[in-house]
Image (cartoon, rainbow, N blue to C red; front, side):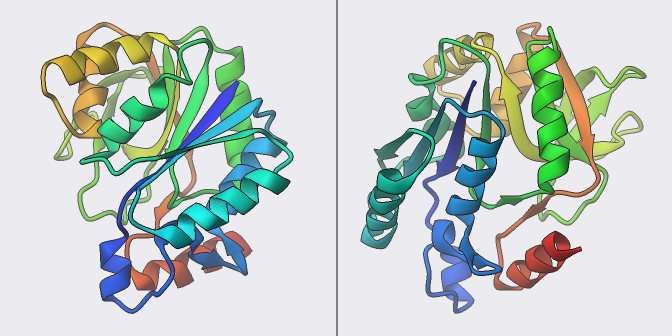
Length: 233
């Protein structure tokens, strides 16, 4: 099973708030966020980790070159500036067509033990996809997840509905069927990851929600301290 990381954003909000490091290199308890993810993926049986970064930050390129040289799991690094996370996913997708895979963004913070259970559940699952969800909401624009009684995903919404107990945690486990949907979205000029997720439902893929107790994003300087406190508990 392969793992992929979208890390092509500019991190402009962090920079505006005085954080000097590029987002992938922001330290949580002395470890760069990108390093933390790669190590977690390695411990969860990754056969390869594919990463996309933008072409604007030499420091990130240098760090990834050094990480690739010492990593215990094979790394593939794509250097390309893209207009959205969905376009970044499209660049990664050519490495993900053969088998089940897990995709996330570099600033997604979760507890490793929950992640390990999530990955194992997906490995054993016959579903077309399994999405990490949480009822902890600390996001500026959350994507609400509609589910039925068996946690089958019925829809993705910009606003809460009665069937929306959870929001998206930004960790996606998918099969190669999802790559076909992604191509259809690109062909139609659709953008944004949430619209791709809606496309998965529209094209009839069977998706399951997997609850995590808490998932955080590091979008602002204050989120760094929140993430460190969360991981230290």
